[in-house]
Picture: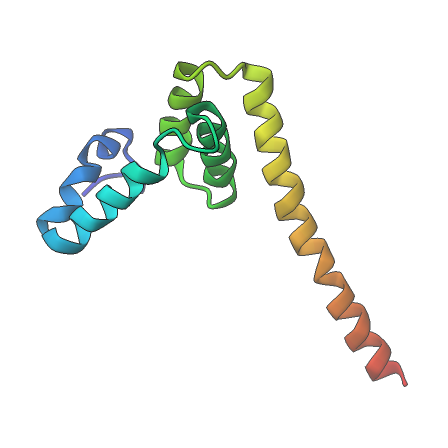
Length: 111
């Protein structure tokens, strides 16, 4: 058994998830590939979005993959960190906005 939950070598095994459910796995990878094709957004923009989302979902495999992809598609270190800050702001804001619900509950209980 592995000592770590995450092994960076496992990222290379990602395509193997089709082993246990080929049809759905193949459909996912076809969709995944189409999503990252150049479209209204450039590959660089999509890589930066993916990098930001990877931080919000805390996926170390995705962070590794989209750090590399962002660099390969021409993103700068500053752009990559700015994307991470955007993700952080959204995640933090999403927590803080729920403070309104807490305030509403406290006010209701205080009446």
